[in-house]
Amino acid sequence: MSKYHFLAVLVYLFLSCQSSEKKGGVNYQVVQAKLDEAFVNGYFEKVRDETYVLINTNSIYYFFKERKEFLRYKVMLHLIKKDNTFDNEDFFPKKEKISQLTKIGLGDFDTISIKIESKGFVGVRTGQFRSTESGSAKNLWAKQIRFSEINTKNNNATKEKFLKTTGLNSLKNYFAKRLFEGTFYKNSFGFYVLLADNELFLITKNQVATKNKIMVHLVKENSDFDNLSALFSSKRYCKCVTLEKGDLTVYRVVLPELESFEKLRLGEFNDNGNKWVQELYLNEVLSNKLLRYSNEFKLQE
Image 1 (spheres, rainbow, N blue to C red):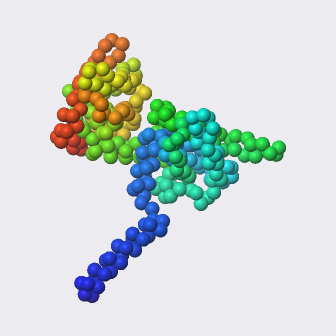
Image 2: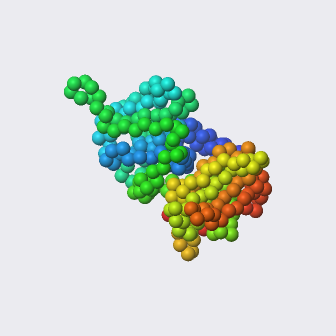
């Protein structure tokens, strides 16, 4: 085979692969990444026996074990406007809608994912219903949530139990990705600090008492500050990190855009006062290329 013939074959194979992708090929890494982000930023709840819903600002995932049961009934999907009117996006959950996510591995669960548009809407209402003999509709389950509440309502226990049952590692996957993208260091108080865009992660091997709070102050040039302090227990992200000497617990705080703030004040405190406080000048910290993650600990499988 001449080298020109060989090159022609390579070009053909490349274009064939590209065409296949455009015709319906699935990039499972992208699919997995979107699911991971939804589990991190979305609201997750068990709505019926072996039926769960995951609501994010741009998508909804329905997870179910009993395929015949779920596919039998119409799904209510209302995008709610500020005046409480809504756009009706109800649909019948046909078998063809079952997501390619099932091929990633969801244990005994199937899933249907639906893209939604949050712009111009304040919330979403979803559920399933069946028609009665009288012709009326009877709800089998229903859930309504405002988009502004999605990040503030945590249901980590249910979420982590489901992830463990299905074998998904969404929280670990997302955290691992952020480790290599953000500013990372260990302070002198036994905490690892990760700042990635508008996400703050605090990682510690110490068992932080539930009465203790994370101090998070975003300080402006005039010394005024936005106070995002909260109980550690309310910001628990996952226990998906290990050191040689034991497990670490990860806490996560979502921050506003950082451009209008000069400093980040971090600490730990309770009713007896501050246990530790540290101030970081954001420009200096974020521009320091030495403050990067270097495999200080490993992630649990």
